[in-house]
Image (cartoon, rainbow, N blue to C red; front, side):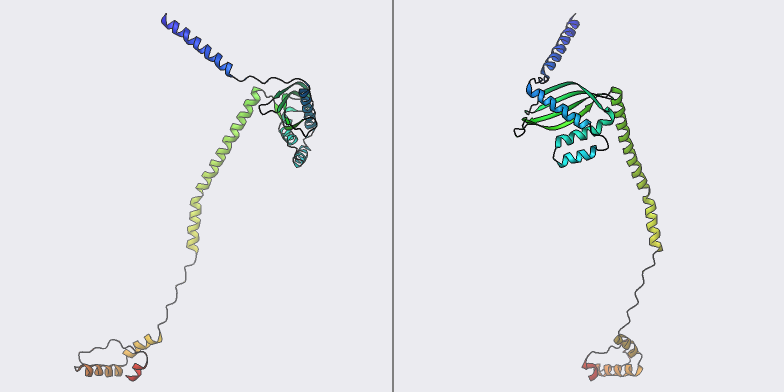
Length: 257
């Protein structure tokens, strides 16, 4: 019995929470009536007819001209029409219209349009413009086709496949690039082996003074004279003296020897 009461109270609490959440949701803005709503609807219908009358062969030219004239609302409408014209087909009739005021003080007009292939909406947004004779000016236009659940799932699946395909293609390209590194290294090593060895610099010739020093040692008469002079200078015997090299003294000292 107690378990049943707990379950009942739990159900009551869940229902109360759902009602509270539904009460907190923002209510749709009330549709405007009167002269301003009729004027906005008329302008929206005129702009929709003008945009949908543009063919695929000239729509880019019209869009570029609108951008050049700084007519951003018409440029946005042409860009939106270009992206959906293949799906919607020709506009047939307007079955419903609704004008509401936005939070920033502007106006939104939504037309329910029957196209050749499907239903859709055409939205026009306006802002107050006191320089305009009618007091408002358009800011942007857009088309929103109604797609079936199957079409939505098909587009989502196609987008998923395209994304995954691009990722796999990039990974395959990176793996192929990494696998080519060994061939690049082999080519560089082969190129280094084929390159000629650098030339060995020629030995620097010995100065004339050094050559002359070696030649002076071979002069036995000069060696004997120098040995005797050294022995006489040291007052010793010349038998213990061995001349290994003879160097010429620079300057006038050699000449005075």
